[in-house]
Length: 563
Image (cartoon, rainbow, N blue to C red; front, side, top):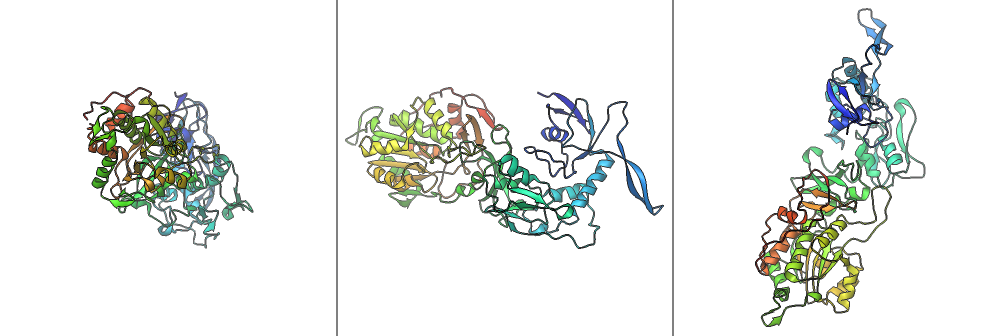
C-alpha cells in the first residue's frame, strides 16, 4: 500500500516509505534516464544522468546557482542563474512533492551535456560491440543528444580486452565508471574484488591484485553494465541481439527457481544466453553463474530419438515396444490374465518421478501409475545436492523437488523415496517393472546400470542421454524445459510458469503427452488433450501466469477413464 504520492511531470506516482524519486518512477513505469542507479543496488549518484528539477514547497524560492555561460553577443562568458538540479536516485519522496523531468528545459540541457561528456573519450566501435542494440549510451544519445562529437583531440586510450576471470572480459575505453559492477561484487556477492583507480578521464575498473573475478555472480557484473565495457566470454561475438528473441522461463539449476529470460535465435532454434527476469519474491534482479550458464542444456546431450534396446527407433515403434514390455500391467485392476500370463503384482512395480521435470509431466505419470498400473511405490530421480552460497544458490540442484512431493501428496502416495532405495529393491528382487521419468540420478551410474539391467521391463521418459535411458529397454524422448510450457514449484512453495521458448528437437514431445500416448497404447483412454487438463486436476484454484503463486493443496477431481 502506498505511503503517499508525488507528481512527475504532472503524473501522479505512488511511493512507499524510503523510496527515492527514481525508485518510485521505476515501479510506476515512468522512465527517468540513468546509468549508475540500479533497483537492486545502492545509489552512488555519480553519473548525474537522472538529474531532475524538484519544485520547492509553496512560499519557498527555488534554489539557484551562479554559473558561467557563453554569450555570443559579448563574445565572452557571463554569470547567469541556474536552477540547482537534484539526482533522482538520491532525492527521497515526500507526499505532495512535484518533480519536473521531461518537461524541464534545464533538465534537458543537463542530460545532453552529461551524455556529451560521457562520449568524449568513448570509442565509437558500435559495429563490433556486443552491447550494440541494447546499449544505454546508444539509446540516450538518440533521446537526449543527437549531436556530433565536438572534441577533435585524440581521445584518452585505456587497456582493452582485459581478462578479469573465466567469464568476464573488460574494455576500459568503453567504461563510463558507473560502478555497478563494483557494487554487485560488494553488495550482492559479498566479495569486493573489483574497485576503481586513477581519477577523472583516467578512471578504470581493476581486479584486486592476486585475485580473479571468480565469485558466483561474476556474470551479473556484465548483466548490469549499461554499456559494452564488460562482456561475457560465453556470449562475446556469438550473436547480435536484434536477431534474438526471448521467452520467459524458470532456471533449472536449483530449487530457488530463478525467473529468467532465455534468448535464442529463431533462425536455427539455438539458445544463446540466460538473463535474470525481475521477481522480487524469488530472485530479485539476479541469477548465479551456474544458472546463467545452464542454457546449453536445453539442446546439448539431448535424447532426440526413441531408443529400443539402445538402438534408434521410430517413436511409434518405441511406443508399441514399451506397451508390449508393460503388457503384464494391463490387468492389474481386474486381476485377470493376459495372453495366458498373470498380471504383475502392484508391489513389484516401481514408478520413478523426476525433480527435473515439470509438475504436468510428474502428475501424468503418477496418475497413470495409480489408476492403471496399480503401483504403490514412488521414487524420485534427481541431481545430487551441491553447495549452497547463502545468496540465491541452494544445495538442492533440482527445480521441482517440491512439485514432486505435491504430486505424490495430491494423488495419495507416500513421499517418494530416494533412487538409491529403488536400486536396493531391484538388487533384492522386490521390483521387476520400472517406469521412470528423467535421466539424471544421485547414485553411482555404473551401479545403477548394473542393477536396472536385471529388470523384466524398464521404460524411461527422458530429455537427455543420462543413466536411465541408456539402460532402459525402451527410452522415449521428452522435450526439455525450454521446449514445452511447464509448471515448477520452488523451495518457497511458489508455483511458477515457464513458457515454451524453443521448438522441440527430433521426435521429442512433452513427457506428459508421451505418458498419455503410452497409456492409450496399453488400452487406457485418457481424455487429456492439453496441459490445462492436467493443471485443472493438480491446481483446481484459478490462476494466472504473472509469476509466482501459492500452491494449492486441493485433491484433484477424478477423470472418467475407459479401459
